[in-house]
Image (cartoon, rainbow, N blue to C red):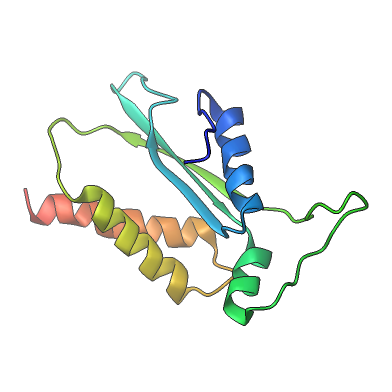
Length: 134
């Protein structure tokens, strides 16, 4: 979509910042293979980045941006990394479920969510689906 290639964690952060520059308040890369193995097997890594200033702008329909001397937006993104085991098998609809749960929890928590709590709630609900529906 942006032409930004993700090859390591630094490039993932760079791509998230590029998407923030387009005014997108929350950017999620749900399952990259950047950290793809440890002693337990294959791992997936997710990245979440949230800019509260952009979320507030969206909610108020007003520009609240703070510009630096070069005219670029200045704000700090709240970021987290999630590493989890890759399950064997082929799954359908998991991306849709993850997107819906993430949207629900982030929207419920408002423009300044605690990302760790929101993502923990999302992943906990997600994992429960695998235990309930084997």
